[in-house]
Image 1 (spheres, rainbow, N blue to C red):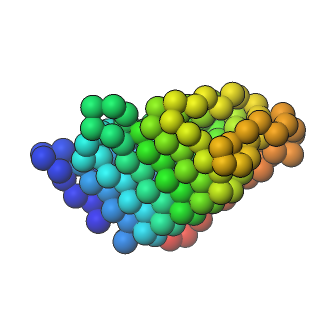
Image 2: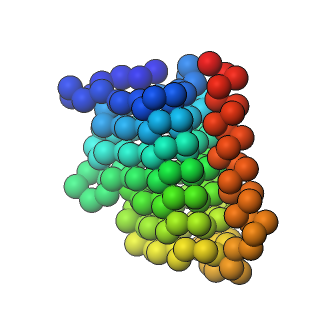
Image 3: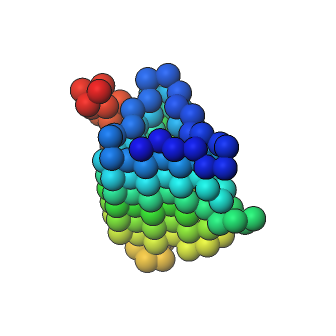
Length: 167
């Protein structure tokens, strides 16, 4: 479902895919080649949501913001795993947000970060570029290696390819 809210309609870039039962409401911009998967909810009713190019928001994830406080921005080539909550945060380019993670208001995840499954990023936290973070609250574990960077690349590429097969 793609629906206007108070006169603002979600916008989809060229080649973007939105699953039939995903919900996009209001001030949501999905970049070219990005994909929004089954059961995902992106509510741009109280704050804008911006998603860059070739990113994916997987099944049953929730993206929202807080009135007067925080919007949500997702960069390019980002993978947002299944059942993730992103609430009023900023996600940089080439980030993997693991399944079941929660990222709260005004948190910033810089570029080239892996956030492990089930992690919690507390309000106003900053996760530095080039690191793996795990836990609740999320803590630095180690620097990313070439294998981690390849995993990030392969992840978003797989969803660009898969979205073409779901059209």
